[in-house]
Amino acid sequence: MARFVAQLNPHVDFFHPDILIPVGRAPGQLYVMGDNTNGKQLLRCPLATATFVAAQPDPEPNLTIWNLAVNETEEDVLITWPIETVMPSTSALEYAAAHILLTNNIHQQWAAYVAGVLVVLQRERGLHFAQGLHLFIALDLPAGHEFGSSAALSIATMQVVCAVCDLLLNGHEIALLCQKVEHEVVGTSASRADQIIAIDGEQNRLTVLNRQSAAHPTSLALPSDLALWRITVGAHLADHEMIRVAALWGIISWLIWHIQM
Image (cartoon, rainbow, N blue to C red; front, side, top):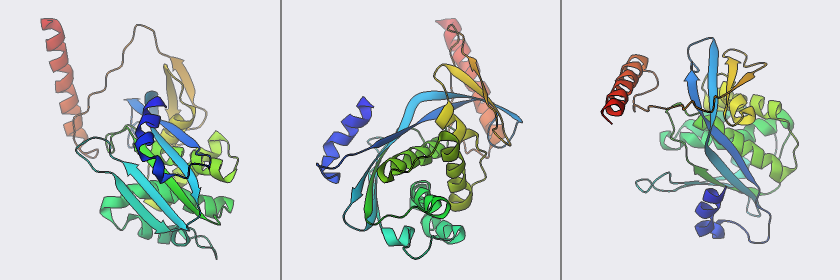
């Protein structure tokens, strides 16, 4: 949280100084065994690295999303939609229409995980904003490398939107609704496992889930003398053969270096 506050402080003019700013947090996760496309059983471990989302109502009828750059080589991204575009006052957007609206710009498709939360909450829980909303996002998780970054983004967004609107949802409800964001609005077919870990994952414990249902997860304590290492090879998620070969080479390289030391 201290890191997020430090990231937020230079941009305090994004918010009104006299209105409460709730913050949502959802951790990334380490895929210890199995992923969202293969393997019946999944073994996951939550990370200390997380996604933070701060929110505040805005008198102007706009949805404004500020995505802070992950590193110095990138730029901050600021997106603004009229709130009526995302949450029409007459009736909630159909999911097919929301998918087209929020994913038609390839450079802003990540925003579907954020604005999609509003679409789902309006359709499934009758939520409606009489005013606008400011969302400030700090992503410490790299996208597209199986750290559960998309689930963390939607979970943290839903947490903070619910706080702004005094909407009470339990962890199971948030996980199901965020899975609907991914399936219906974004258009992915990920299992519910990422959302479950982002909600219920415990520090220093492995969570065991069934890939299809993610129901009734169990957890195992990590031995104190066990360290988990993650090798990120930079390959596309669909190229499983390259990922496995590169990971094996990374392990061999690490062992050689360790022996030489």
